[in-house]
Length: 467
Image (cartoon, rainbow, N blue to C red; front, side, top):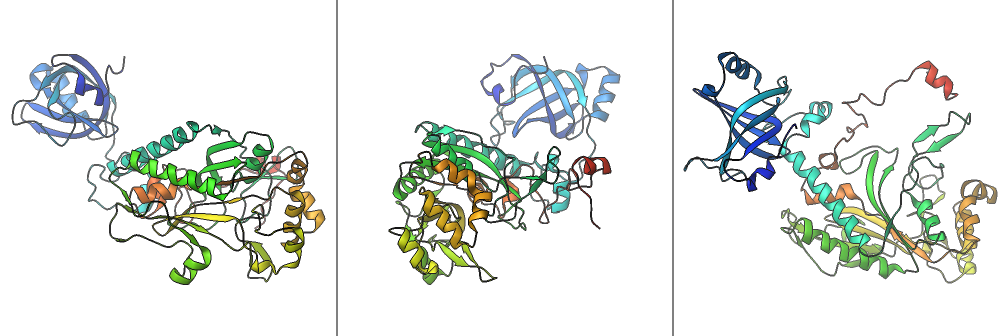
């Protein structure tokens, strides 16, 4: 048995109990014939006392040389109360300690490339990213990753309790013109053809509504080949939700109630500026704030203030730099028109959409829409966007085909997980709340990715590198 208890479990162990612990040496302090170490499991610490008199001369020498910070050790010993005046009120186990009877060095550690136990020490990001597994041992990131865990668990439990079904969708899909640039994956078995990693599960979740599941969610990884920035990464996580037989208010009410619950449960020290969340039109916020993601906090210097809002009434279409039309959200969004005749006769730039964004403290943390469930209207939207009927059939024929077999009215939303946790943790960018993020230029310094591949791999994938 490598250990009988974790450090946290020792709080409830009776004095005099023999225990076996295992973990990392967090700190070491020498006091004459005594060595004190703080043994670490996650963020929990236990003081262990090693008395020279309990070990042979050769064992004493080995311990003094081998026990250094970050060494992995096993300790067999007895729990005892600390002497009055020696308690440590700053840690949960501060009233007890373990007197070591046997110490086994499981794996010694070299001196880390940066200090792990002092948050005041500034470490360059390139070094942190190269040694991310060490960076993740630091209290700041341990706290952030545990916060992320609690938020995701609370999201999942909240939705399951309300009859939502968690369903996984594929990572290998079809490249379609929906917005950002796709990450492409070449097919070995089908020469010259490619899969695309999903920018979102948009079409799959709509097909799940056709399949009759009615309430779907997924904590899902998404991929967009975009330039990175403080609140954007090439791969990110979102809470994907889709519902049948709903209108806009049903979805906004669900999200508002869920996020009020999340804040109270996970970060009760935070306070929400306005309940119910304000609902503001796109035209209103652009005129008043000059942005569609306004910061509505009363005191922007207060890290515990959360100003949620919904932005509504977006335009359906926008003019792109090349003069062509694009969808403000995506082409599956329902245009707010009475009928097909109005869609075809109106100036596209005057048509509004049943689209809504979810914003918090000046960040967009989610977006969604009521979807077009009429296949003829969806076909017309694609044609307004400049797609020929042949292109539409080639790119989206599978969806239009599915809609011929009875599709319910449906809509959804996809709040971002990373940005929300970044704001809760009061961090400057989402890299601080992701376990293994990419650098600002999209590299993984720890794995040295992206990297070259062998000529044999390229040959199997029917690819050649053009200098």
